[in-house]
Length: 70
Image (tube, rainbow, N blue to C red; front, side):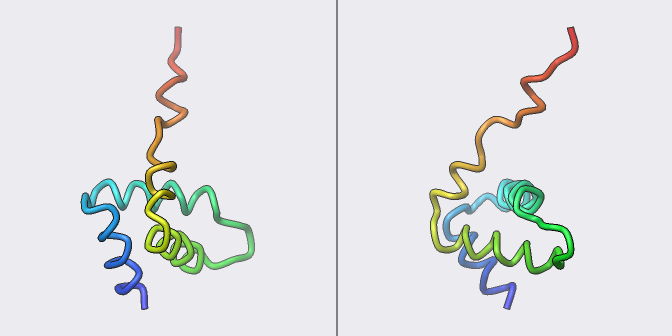
């Protein structure tokens, strides 16, 4: 169930707002056409729950912040 995946992910990232941001970023990056978005989200949550280093790597600076109009 998704609630179990969320509790495992929260154990590695206790800040709920950051977890949601990382989940959205990971889902956008991993999503493939012709697959359900829910399945992609579940896969991202599984990865957060298994390996806490995944969340740390994905929390780097956002590319859009570096691109500013001159």
